[in-house]
Amino acid sequence: MKCGLIGERLAHSYSPEIHKELAGDVYTYELYPIPLESLGEFVASRQLDAMNVTIPYKKAIIPYLDHVSERALRIGAVNTVFTDAQGNLHGDNTDYYGFMKTLERLSVDVGGKKALVLGSGGASLTAQAVLSDLGADVVVISRNGEDNYSNVYIKHADAELIINCTPVGMYPNNGVSPIELERFSSVLGVMDMVYNPSKTKLIYDAEKLNIPVLNGLYMLVAQAAAASEIFLDGARKFTDADIERIERKIRRSSENIILVGMPGSGKTTVGEILSQRLSREFIDTDEMIVQRVGMDIPTIFEKHGEEKFRLIEEAVCADVGKMSGKIISTGGGAVTRPANRYSLRQNSVIVFLERELSLLPTDGRPLSEKSRLAKMLDIRLPMYLDFSDVRVNNDSAPEDTADKILQILDDVYNSEV
Image 1 (tube, one colour):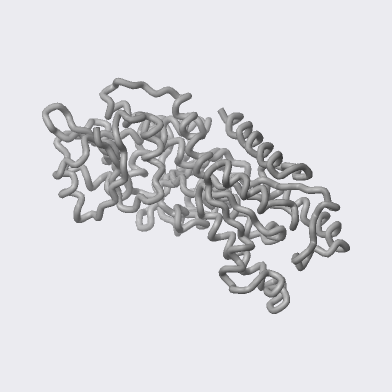
Image 2 (cartoon, helix red, strand yellow):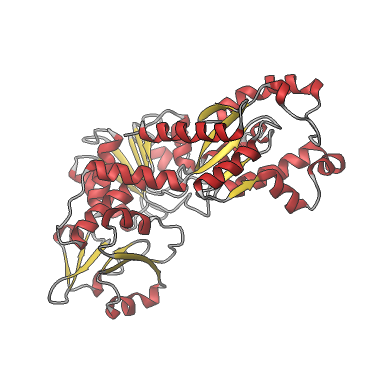
């Protein structure tokens, strides 16, 4: 069987990896980015035995199908298409299942709750259907509708559930949110259908406010499992445990491992070892700064001062934070800029690499004279702890430290079952 995903921009989709986990070699699954004007021609070409459909074609594909399920018709959006024995094209909506499973995982009883659905496209239609079926009071926020982003804080500041069904905050336009979450006083749960980056600005803000929150990756895997069962004509059934296992595996492979710590704590050495162990690209933000400016770091400090250096470093952190699946070593002072916290946390697990003060080298490090290191550590230690997810001592051999990091990350991801 030949299957795939059609949409407009698909370069950073995780769907091929997910379907590889679901189906193995039973069918192939590839990405097919196509422009809107070619949608009808592509569907008519019958290049695929079955397919998934994503933004912005979940509504647009319906006229090209022979049959559409009652559920998909009620929602007004199709995300799964398959061919029957007679060659007819059938459209269904497995996003419904995926969204329902995500709400279950969010553990918020939506019955009778006021739910804001941000956006009015195909993804929004699915969210509206599920929420309505569960008894929520659904309000759709769109750019030009009666309920819009201009009056949302006046009319709906009492919302108890917020669902982002827009692409706002999605890679590569990271760091923006469709709403100011702190202006809502009664929110019990947030879901963002975006999954790249792992932490959108909306999710990041929810976490800061201690609001239960999920991104769209679990939904993506759950709907893919439902679609795969259709593709395989029921030959395989996938459980919640299957969905959770695949979601963790995709997230672990896609999230960066970022190392923070004092200058000379071994971030570059340990990072290079992790890069080799995991077959991932290694990136050193200090080296990126040198390449970007065309001079070494001591010279940057000498000619332009620390403030200029930190601004350059901030821009580099914003760039590397958007990446996926990398091993990234940061400069010792990256944690001193508040803007870097979101940049580094949005798609990463962050490891604080700690080392005994007497073992920190100082050669070629403008801010690391011995007399300043103890004071620097006193100031930065709370920042390292605030930035990081895990804390690892690097007073032993770097190979042993890399082993410790990998074991800790195994425990972190496995504990989320």
